[in-house]
Image: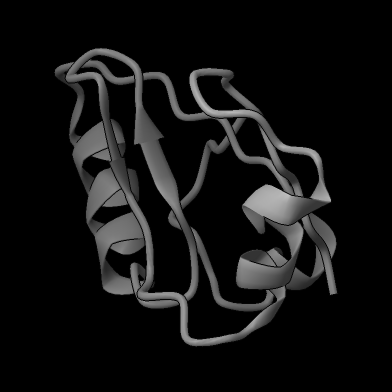
Length: 83
């Protein structure tokens, strides 16, 4: 869990970062630092039930989610990719 503002170098070490939202000034500073790097990371907000992520511009997902490869409609899949 973050206790200091996020630095770009933190993304080299951590794949998943948890932030506890509170009314403290430190929490506000951390949330602002996350917003600053929004083009590099996806932010899943469980309180607001939203997902903000950078625009995907590759071709890998279309190959993985091709209906001819066995993915059936109506099912939910969680896909986690790392480069």
